[in-house]
Image (cartoon, rainbow, N blue to C red; front, side, top):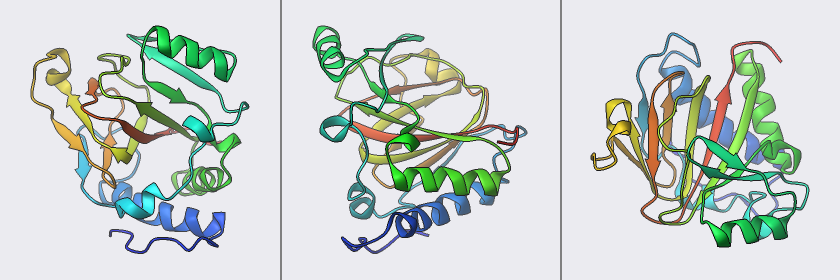
Amino acid sequence: MTVEATPSPKATDAEIAANFVGPLWAVIQGTGGPRPIQKSHHHFPKVFDAAWLNSLVLPIGEDRPEAQAVKLAKPLDYERPSTKAAAAAAYAREPRTHVYENVVWTSAWMAMVTQVLEELAGGRVFCTVYESAAGDQNLGPHVDDWYGAAVQYSGSKEWLLGEAADNTSAEPTVVMQPGDVQLLPKGLLHDVRTPERSVHLAFSFFSDRP
């Protein structure tokens, strides 16, 4: 199921999207699909080749256009700087995870990925990118109102799921490495820790049709 080849520099956005959606949808369908009845999480190591995945350009960091919205996470809340300069100043004041919302507006291949996933799932799909340096603040323990699929793009992320999310010293339930996919049911309590710089993509599936 792993995407083996690094894409050609001339690969089109449509080709990239097809190579991305295929493995991701396969693991989602393999667990019954993005349905509200899902109760447990699923971790799939090395669904994507890490080098292939990391070669894909995301509208984050130095590559973030001004039009790409970003917010800085803090426990159960966010700060939403209005400009790149304001975001840099806010981060310097208080290091926190960068949350890039609605990346489909600034990334053509991501727009194609979410469009195909919406057609396959029969409902709305949003993609958010989370970028964290080691030790950055995050939202803390919380639940989401959607079925989620997380794809580890680079670095590693420790996930604490269920009861472990309420214990900051608990052993991680899952450690995500580049190329891994994790599926999270709606309503599952979770928290994360960042031992090193991490970037992951989070796809949120909603049951209503677009």
